[in-house]
Each structure stands twice: as C-alpha cells, then as structure tokens.
Image 1: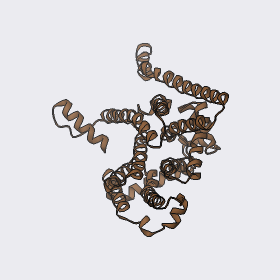
Image 2 (image 1 turned 60 degrees about the vertical axis):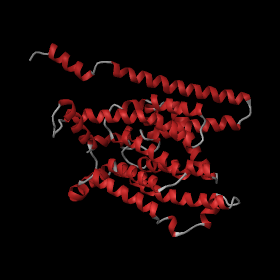
Image 3 (image 1 turned 30 degrees about the vertical axis):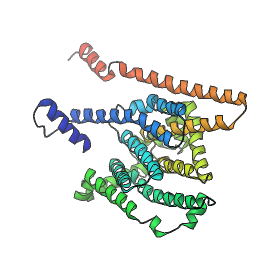
Image 4 (image 1 turned 180 degrees about the vertical axis):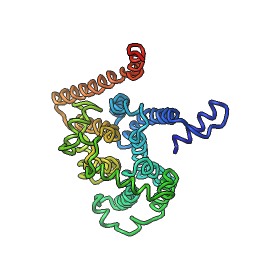
Length: 365
C-alpha cells in the first residue's frame, strides 16, 4: 500500500496530472526505489547501533563497510522484497530499544509501536516483536533497581522487582495499541475480508512447514535446518569465512549478554532478542529461501566486529593479536572482493533483453 501510494504521488507529479492507477511496471519500479533507499539506510543504521552498544569507531566503520558490500544486501537492495524492508525496520527497532533503555519516554514507545506495526504489516512472522515492549519494560525496571542498590545483579534485581506493572503499564499499552492500528491500516483486508486472509495464511503456513508439497519447495526435501543455511545460504550472501566467524560471533554475543549482569549487557541482550526471535522462526522452517537470511546480515556484521574488538582487548600476546588481525583483514578482503565482483553484474546489459534481441535477429518470424 505504501508503494502504491508513493507511486501515485510520484507519477502524478512527474506527469503533471492526477494518476489514479499504476501499471505493474510502475509499481515494480517504485518498489525498487524503496528497496534501494532502505538498502542505503542500513549503512548508517549499523554504525549507530554499533555505537550504542559500545563498539569503537574503527570497528563501527568495518561493520558499516561490510553492510555496504555484502552480496546479499547488494542483490536484495535491487528488488522490492519484504526482507530488505524488514531489515531496515529491525535495525530501527533495535536502535530505538537501546535508546529507550538509555532514556525512556512515551514518545519512544509510540514510535516503537509504529515500527512494530509496520514490521508485522510487512510480514506476519514479525509478530514476535510484540514481545519487545514487555522485554524493555522489564529491563527498565531491572536497571532502576540496580541503580538504587548497586549490590544487586541484573537477575537479583529482576526477582526483587517482580510486579504486574512490569508487564502491564501505560508505555506497553501505547506501543501495542499503536502497533495494532498501524497493522490494521497497512493490512485492511485482515478486517475487510478475513476469510480470504485466513485461507491465504493457511496456505502459506502449510508451505512453510512442508505439509503442503509444492513444486517450488522441492529443493528443500531432506535438508537439515540451520546446516542448510550455514552451508548453502550464508556463504553465498556474505562469504564462507565470514559465515564461520560471523556465526561464532553472533553466538558469543548472545552468551556474553546472558552471562553478564549489567546495564551494558542488557542493551546488547535486547538487540539479540530482535535477532534471535527472527532466527528461531526461520531456522526452524521447512522452506529456507536465501532472502530469509538477509535481515541477519547487519546483525552478524555488528557481532563480528564486537567479537574481534573484545578478543584484541582481552588477549595480550602480540603473536596472537597479529594472527587475529590477519584473519580480520582476510575476512574484510573476502567480503569486499565478493561484493565488488557481484556488483559488476549490474554494469552488464540485462541478459533477458540480450536474449530477446538475439532471438529477434536470428530466429525467423
């Protein structure tokens, strides 16, 4: 609906008269413009989020640079797919969540509800994000108790402060109501024609779980969740070396945020909640399309630089530091060369146009 509305405005202005209908080609073109804008915005968003969780500037620049040149993000920034929009929304939700933990306000919860509503409206699996306002409310309470009594760890503060207002309060209500209203506006047919929507959701659910065999999911027969993504998806959209170390870093970041019990780790933990909520849904699914892993890439880039910065600070041996630095350079080179090589595809003529031209010239009518 946003694509359609923007398309109407754009073409009405460009043609100097009101246009009340878009052709398929016009809608696709507007969708691709939006994808390109979202793909570009990911670069500063990664930088900001990395800064919020305490990553130093050189490493923030590396994470933003990787986000710029990932094969998967280059590819999907050229197409109007749900995942590039979700990637943008998830990063914004993460940035806003950390901001709420720094300084909470009703306005921020209102904006959080708006972003969650847009995410769920874009793709229904984002419904897990409705848990984020509750998580933030709990974390806020934990941080308040910890500040009042520095002897308490985060977990002690949680058990000391259990109260129904942690789960039901004005801020949570505002976020959830806003999310519901935005979802209804962006998906009016959930209300206007729920029977058809229910039928569509049933079909999509059966395809996603593999209970309904269709020709375009046969490639996933006898594939193992998680292993398939690690072997066949992530290496393509990022790089084999980055997949290995990025995955290790993402797991390490989660473990660290759970093991530590301080305000800094809570900020990392809420970011992990956004990421792992998405991962749990898609890594347990029967269908394992490449685009499903696109929203993971910026978070992996942040986790990657976070881990290397921690390691280089913790390890005092110069020899090991040199080895680690060499690995970082190799991975940066791998991601960069793959991205640049892939980008050259877009400098070539469209193969479909070339094929049509050759057919017209060489095959008699």
